[in-house]
Length: 507
Ligand code: ATP
Image (cartoon, rainbow, N blue to C red; front, side, top):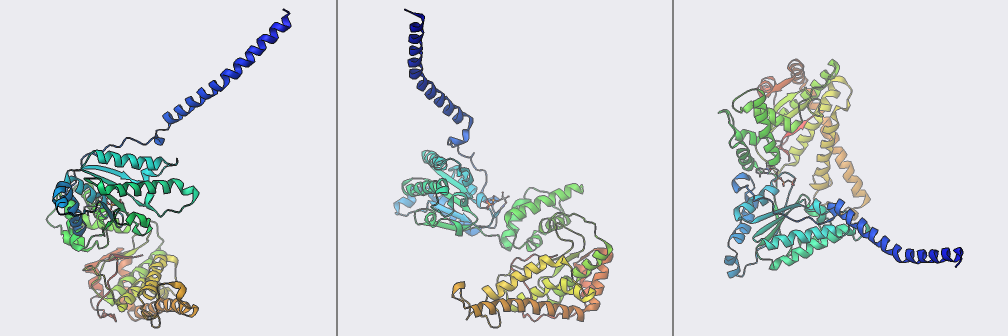
């Protein structure tokens, strides 16, 4: 056999070998790569779900949400004694949605239910179900509910439900979201026969949730957790000062009065700030002054001095004096607690009004007075210096919001009244829309003119306030009473001004 033939035979064998082995080598490499990818990216495997350690939060740790707590007590009763409900054929809601602004205690309530019922508590933020890989979020949900079913009685708590609960769009690029939400709906449907498993969802935005989530059999009980009222705030302050050494001068009721509109989380923050303040001053107990400082810090931002020129200081003093004078002229019960030209947070100076009580209804006159108070800073600048600055931006924004609400929502215009109000914008004629805009502008213009007139009329009092502010930089309630004691009220309002969010800080 010649060398050439030998070489050709060997080459043929080699070629056949490659053709046989190469696909196998490729396949092996592919399997190895896939296996490594799965190992390196644990996020793409649904995690094993462990119950959150038994909740230690009790009902006594939650204050000021009595109505929500009463609704949830039913769930506790059911989990403790399901046969009592079954014997009467009662269908206890198994999906409960807690909704309300952030920091109002929704998570805290779910934990208290878990503690009171002794159920296993599976807490997951819905954000954890949001995945890059199609189908993985759904797998996580399946996993969570399957584990809860195996460990009855159990509570599945899904926080920030909006992360998966937003309305389905049907778009291809939202497939993963839609699939995750569909899986949640399937699990909720399976709950009717799920025994002692209750699912509690929490959301800040009920209106954005997919309506399918709220249908009977799913999250069919919706419980509003709103910011606390006066008694609620006092109770929450009690919770967060429990175990803290308090001085005898502390009046939690007074602190509660000054914190209308704040949430449980804000109040907890205030109590903590007060304790830090006392520690910094090396006091053994927390005093009222610590609460006053903490309150201002939380409401108006952290103290942060800025360098302000003498000329700016004069303008600031008159601006703040304008707010304080006008608050006095329109009357109680929203007295000015403090006026200052020391900067805090974004504001160069501010006037702090705190109400005597929570108010939910306000007359047209009261709201108009409030517009005057908000615009009085700029009005004072105009009356005294003949020119205006950019320092009133925040005041103007809020005044515009109020005026808009008065005309567009409350039908408080001269011509735009409840009779001409229509909810749907399209149904309004161009003429009515123009009328509405004109009315809003007229309202703020009139309030501004009236503020200028009153400030001009009481110019001597304004000067007294501004001079005193320039000298002391901060004026408290007693000093204001002394400076304004002889100035008569000018309000048209039969009742006095109250604001929806009652602590008012005018910059
Ligand atoms: P989010 O919507 O942002 O999740 P949330 O409504 O779930 O907020 P929580 O997480 O329950 O609010 O509250 C945050 C913190 O605020 C709590 O840990 C607690 O310290 C305090 N807090 C809130 N509400 C209350 C309350 N009603 N009673 C006592 N403390 C409260």
